Structure formats: structure tokens, C-alpha cells
Amino acid sequence: MKVAVLANLKEDAPISPDDPPGRWDDLDDKVTVDMILDSLQSIGHQAKYFPAGLESVENIEKYNPDLCFNSGEGHYGASREAQMPAILDSLRIPYTCGGVLGMSLSHNKHIAKRIFRCFGLPTANFVVLRDPTELKEIKLIYPLFVKPAYEGSSIGINENALVRNREELEKQVQWVWENVHAYILVEEYIEGREFTISILGNEVLPIVEIISPTGFYSNEQKEDLESEVYRVCPAHLPVEKTEEFQALALKAKQALELEDVCRMDMRMDSAGNPYILEVNPIPLMHPDPEQASLVYAARAAGYSYKDIIRKIVDSAIERWNLKN
Ligand SMILES: Nc1ncnc2c1ncn2[C@@H]1O[C@H](COP(=O)(O)OP(=O)(O)OP(=O)(O)O)[C@@H](O)[C@H]1O
Ligand SMILES: [Mg+2]
Image (cartoon, rainbow, N blue to C red; front, side, top):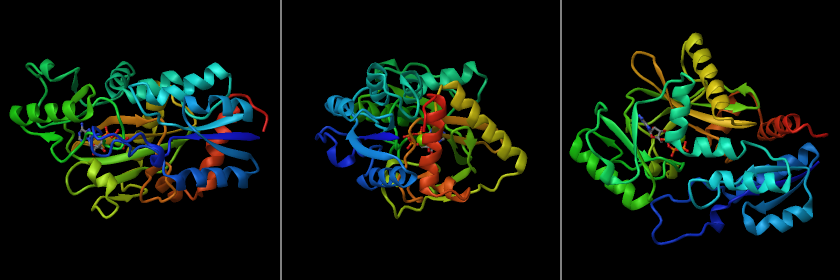
């Protein structure tokens, strides 16, 4: 098959002096794209990279792929992960990962949380603010956690995201507003262990526990490869809890209409109750397992990087009814 690999490389990011810290951290490194291309070729596909954006429309059409391997996060707006699916839908070219709806629902965390509630899936109590002036009486129980309602890689989550009183809350809401220019999500802080659960096709991988000495996983820690954050996989959990959380991940994937691959971030309180933080429709696929929980989990399941790519592509082939 002929596969177009679509991604937004960090090295091509439209850097601006107004960018908040880590603004482009969720884009791909070149090493990731090279690894995806190599894997596709070693499976027997033809593969070529295209920047994920309007500038590639003509070239993608000319290449005439059977499938696009979509890793495009986009650059601007709350629709940024949905932009490539919209373009590919209009070109009538099949692609991996969620469509416009799935990407939009999961990118906008407050909407994803409302969907979880509709499906009876657990998520922390929250309010969403369009700007700091909307911060009136809040009925949530402190401590709270303040983050942008969209974005990934903990962009807009600094060391002050955890707030213990009104004064800290006001300050952090203002900081997110001024630095990220996004809607602001204020959630109850879930004290406890953190897990992330990846799904390849419909196969849920072993659970990864993320252990951070600061009590949450900030942008600074995600950027710092020497940080004290580390992963354990399979997470040390009783079998029933493992199965409960894996089933929850599958339900969250279905609720948000995600496809082929995704990763659910969650926390567990001291009573063992789970809370979904968010679901990532295009999880980071850096070949270094220490940087990408999906790759870390796949390794624990005995899968190589090539196996990951094969499973994503096979899932898309089946879904789109393509001939391999
Ligand atoms: N309600 C909460 N309670 C406790 N910790 C939280 C909460 N919300 C977020 N966090 C912490 O902040 C981190 C980042 O939050 P979240 O996963 O929502 O952001 P993200 O930037 O989209 O992450 P990703 O890099 O996975 O895309 C979490 O991994 C967790 O450590
Ligand atoms: Mg996350």
C-alpha cells in the first residue's frame, strides 16, 4: 500500500515570542517521523512524509496514497487536531486515528468531560471559564487544579497548577489566560496514583503508572528528560483493578469516537476510585519509551515499534475496508 505520513515537526513550528512555555511540545520530533516511515517500509508499504497542513494538499493528491498515517497535531485553534481529518475527508482519502468529531471532542477537555458524564464515566468535578472574569463563586472542593481546556503535553500546566485557596486560584487562572489564551479548566485535584492506558486497535495495552515526586506531571517535567518522573509497567495493581481500568479506557475511547490508537490519562484516589483526566487521540510516538508512554506500554506487551505501526495501520485498513 502507498501510505502518506502526515505530521507537524517541531523544527517547522511557527515559533513566536508570545508562545507560552512548551507551546510546541506536542509536535513530532524528526526521529519519530523517520521511525514511522522506516516501520511502514519494513512492513512492505511505500511511505512518504508530508507536513500536515494546507500547504501539502496538492502534493498529497499527487502522491495519491491509499491511506494517510495521521500524526498531525496542527498549529492553531481549538480545532487543530481536527484540521487534517477535515481536509482528508474532503479529499476522500482514508486516514488513521479519529475523525473530525473524535479529534474535536478529545482536544476540548471540558467537552470530553461532559461526554464522559453522559456515558456514566468518572471524571473530576470541574468548571470551565472563557476568561478570568467568569471566575465567580466556585462550588468545587479545594485543592483544585488549573489547566487550559485544550492543548497537550502539559502546555499551560506549571508548578503552580495545583491551588489550595481562592488567592492561588485567581492567580493561576490569570496566568493560564495570559500565557495560553485558551478557555480555562478548573478541576478538583485528584490526590493519588496516576496511570496512563494505551489502546492499539481494540487491544488495551498493559497499564503504565506515572510516578512524579511533585504530585502531578507538569510541562517542565515532560521537557526535562532528567526529571525525577518515572514509569512502571505493568502498573502494580490487583487484577480486578487492572481489568476495571482497562475497560474504562475502552469505554472512553468509544465515547469520544476515537480510532486505531489512543491513550487515556487517569488518576485513582485513595479509595481506589478512578477519574479520567483526558484521552489523547494521537498519543506521542517518540521511539524512546522513556518519552512516550504508548511505546513504553507496547514494549511491556512484547511489541516492537514496527508492531505498533502495523497494528495502527491494520486497524485503519479494516475500518476503511481497504485492500492491503
Ligand atoms: N484533576 C487533576 N487532578 C490531579 N492531577 C491532575 C488533574 N488534571 C491534570 N493533572 C496532572 O496534570 C498532568 C497533565 O494533565 P492533562 O493530562 O490533562 O494534560 P495534557 O497536557 O493534555 O497532557 P498530555 O501530555 O498527556 O497531552 C496530568 O498528567 C496530571 O499529573
Ligand atoms: Mg495528559
